[in-house]
Image 1: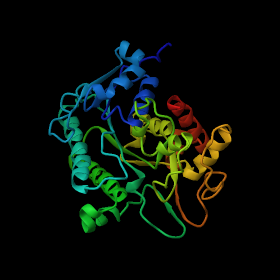
Image 2: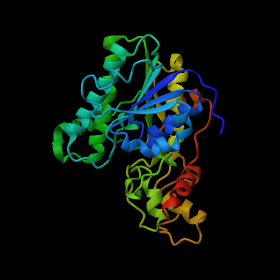
Image 3: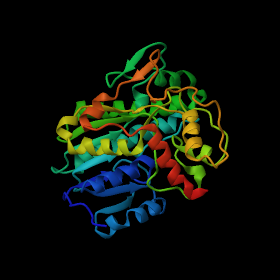
Length: 348
């Protein structure tokens, strides 16, 4: 395979072996960038290194160890000579039980890489893009309401303050992302860096992993329902109330957009959301695509629209800012589910 023409620019991706980050690495590489990724250990990134071996052999992809992202100076060496930073290393789960270490890691990891970028990034560093979450935007609302990048979740941090270790895991995760993104923008306001700063705020991310974990139990939470239903298990309960989704490859391309169009994206938040799916929709899609497999059926057609859009009488997410900025439509839910299922056939 011929590699794309090199741009002779280097992007640092923290937590490069993650579900979204690995696809982001591929998107940057396919766009002609070289990538330096960080992982807590080289062993944890071994499957990714094999998947991108052609880029490794060409000297355009490398992984370096950053064992603890919250240690001051953890990224001092890795930011040197890079043209852009995509900060994606942060705790991710809807089932956290103790908010303090999760919020601390999210905030201090973000500040650690920003301070390293400011001190050691050099004059060639032009942009830092943070993987945030739509959880920093959305909060519980009843009736019609349209969430945009102007909104902030004012509930989750209050719930953590009120409930402590009794806080539901979803609020802990969202509070960590809120605190990290607030720290990100505060850093910009206080330090006025020469590099641009942008956040990407995806909803629940689905679609095929670039690299499959050795054990399907370790499939990313937000796409694990596809595997569970495909493998004949019961339809799992929903991860979140909205059922909103975006394909992992679209999120990856948005991270690239934040770097390539840094002059446009500077100071901006971009929501990534393609519509509404959910576990019942997954079951319906897979039952149609795999008629010879005995799959859970649930209540076909319940809880989502045939267009996978938002219902007219409830909250909505407006992601037109990101889709217009990219100049392309989002990958649809059916394709996202089927592409993930195709990847998961490996386990059957």
